[in-house]
Image 1 (cartoon, helix red, strand yellow):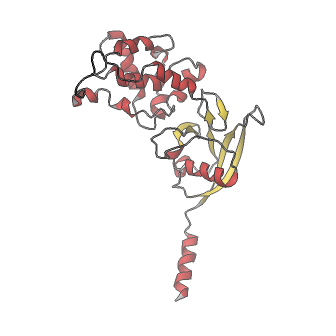
Image 2 (spheres, one colour):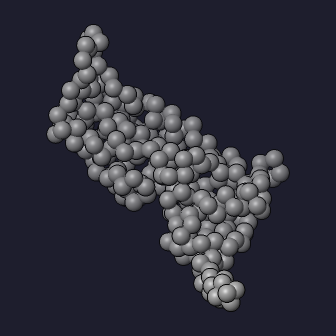
Image 3 (cartoon, one colour):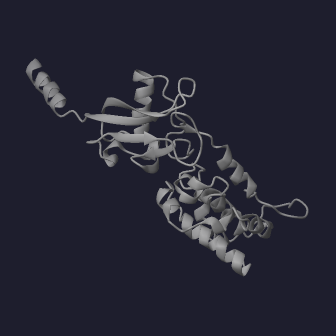
Length: 252
C-alpha cells in the first residue's frame, strides 16, 4: 500500500513548479554610504508568485534590512510602485513569469523622487502637487438637505479619472517630471480632472487657473509614458489633453 504513495511523492517532486530566480535590487543605506549599489538575491519561486512575494521572502528569510513600502498587496493602496525591469509597475500585481525570470529581474525605486532607503522614495513633492489642485468637492451655499444628485451621463464624464490610487507610477514615468520636480505631474492633473468635470463641483475655473501655471498642464509633452505606466488603466494622456482643451475653450 505504501508504494503508490511513494510514487505520488516522487512524481510531485519531479513536477515541482519552483524555479530559481535572481532579483537584482537597487540598494541604498544612507546610514552606511552615500552611494547606491546593486545586490543580487537568489530565490526558489513559483512563476505565478508576484514580485512582492519575492521581496517579502528576501526580507523575512535573507535580509531583514531590505526596505520597501507595501500595504494591501492587492493593487488598491498603490504603495508598492517601483521600477521592475525598467518599467513602473506595482510589485503586488506583477507576476514573476511575466518579467522574464530566466534573466536577473531588476528592481529599483521609481524615478524623479529622492531615494530615502532602498526602494523607498520621498513622496512629499508628489502629494504636495496633489494637494495643490484641490482634490475635493467644492460647492457654495447652505448645506443641502439631501444628497447632490448626478445623472449617469454626468458621472461618466469623469469616471475614468476616479480610478487613481495615487501610486505615482504615472508621474514618476514622465521625462518632464524627472528633469523638473516643479511640474505638477500626471497624477495631480488626473485628480484635478476628476473634479473639474464633476457637474456638482463649483471650483473648476479655479483649478484650471492653478494648472495654467508655468509648471502646470502645459509642461506635458504627450509621450504617453504615463498612460502606459498606469496600473489601473486610466487614459492619463487623454485626461491631460481634455484639461488643456478646457483651458483654451473655457468650456467644462
